[in-house]
Length: 246
Image 1 (cartoon, rainbow, N blue to C red):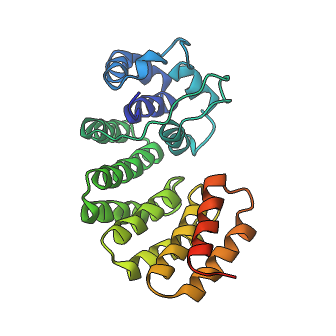
Image 2 (image 1 turned 180 degrees about the vertical axis):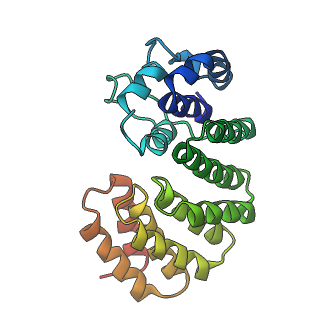
């Protein structure tokens, strides 16, 4: 199943107006079939996963629902609607980004500025990730910067900050990479990408020849993120050994 950004757009529409979503079911179902999400979801009936209208009802009072659900679709997971897992969906087709932009305009036409702003943020973030996956690091840098400047408190901001750092690191612009990862750790410490920002900060410092500073960062990792993944912890141990940290 591809990244179902357009499915979450339909979800946002149903959160804004149940009547509008009902009128738009045919279009929403067409988008869902195109992106493969119709294998598990429908607009109004439970299939393998919940109906979009069920999800809309569950999150109708949650002002952060849209970014949460987009992240859920992107990362995958299980336990909210049962034990059947939803696989992660990491691709962002151009057509889906266009659908998001169209959805944003529909929301603005409804006069709902909050949801229009949420979808607008997701459009900008999606453009950054798409450019990164296409190997366009300069384009990804622009996309992530635009997103972070206009939506610094968005649920996905910590993630975008990390990938901004990666756009610099990939081009061996270690000074800007160091700054980006440090800002990611400072500003989005509690985000899911907080541990990755700190880890990559240490790696970048080591590449720059600042091994003492890198070792201090690696030492801080276990203190700040005792519940980091085993993979992250192993990577920190490897980097500490590689750089001769005591």
